[in-house]
Length: 544
Image (cartoon, rainbow, N blue to C red; front, side):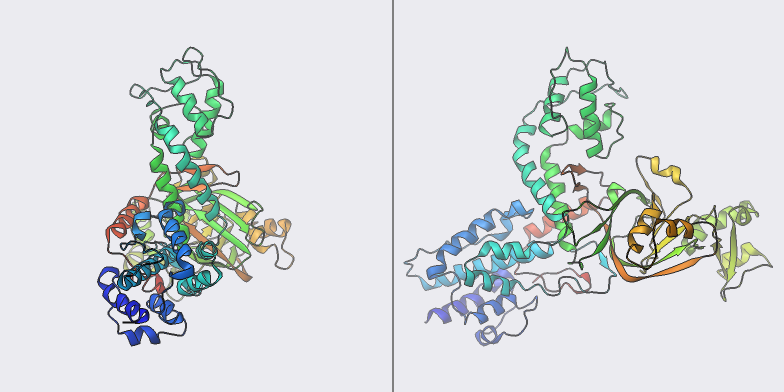
């Protein structure tokens, strides 16, 4: 039996291990054309004439590949998923079956690794409404073939990693936290405070020494101070405020139950949060260079940046209000901002009419007038006669809030068409931005600084400047402004992010999505080894 036939048969024999559908040697040999998600392995060997990929002069490359697979955790992946069950044969191996099986298993594992590094391992939480299929041009088989030809496996890995402005900062922070974990986790536990007790400056605390050491290791205290008679000093308080800022807590410098709890979280959990963020960033498509708007739901924050200058900081950053965790969580998707409406009317969704407006109108017939609302019939005319409550209950009319000071959308709406009718908008309730937890909306994103975002998206369009934006936001008729080029908007969910100062920020899992993703990844870890994704179209779950 020739080595080529032996390899072909090894491909067939290993299908029970790697969940590849049965195929004849001729099918494997004849695979060609553009690589698809279901034939990358066969495509790879067909392009090499069904010859061994890792034998001969590539045996040293095989050692490098095995090392990369063992170090998969540095990319936020699970090393145990990419195992090669057959021992690596020596250069003088006389067992053709072992050589062929090892060759196939290593190729399959490397393709899995490259694919997971690019796509992620779990089914995405996102939906795409930006007009293009994500990851359409990624070809792991061609990437590996080129890497072997050029003897540059590291180049293939770099090419497979996501291209977005956040990924590499999170990856670097993950490496830092892995090194940091043994030192922090060996520290003595912080003593618990009595129920409802608060630790303030000047008060004694038995755990001051451990607290200072912990804050120093975590980077919140750059110049550690001596624990003076176990007293909580103003120097320590400043470091606690910094820690609270990084962990989504009220930045009051007062140590209570929530701060002690956050300080006591083992670093393996923070490492897991960073890994989950890398997984979610892999789901994102390679967006075109240019303006980009990102909203991270758990941090209640928006950034607007230009990816053509990746080293520069975001040009707009602000607090936002997101959907209520218990009732109306903000859906996660990638859309396109296509137009702005200055002084918009609010067309109230039917769900809000039924849950809130109808009960209030039933209690107070003047409710609509007080809120500057009107009823509109199906043909668009204002409803002026008859039983308003009955017509609304029957669905014969809908509620519209007129533009003005009471309008919940404020002075401007940023429209990104999607089936859920989610958009960004100003708000008349500015006082809500001072709250620590801001999941308060019906799902849309309320903006703290809508004028700044309007200036950002309109800056290259005609004569729009800050004066023109502010004039358009003054009370007046509704005005729609179409964007010359749509701006991608990413509604992200990441409980671990890294800001432009390089600080690691850890946030509450307000929607419980981290827990769900951890379960999904654990299921993938224990599943049979895969070769790669079956399909990524329409964001379906994928497996080979």
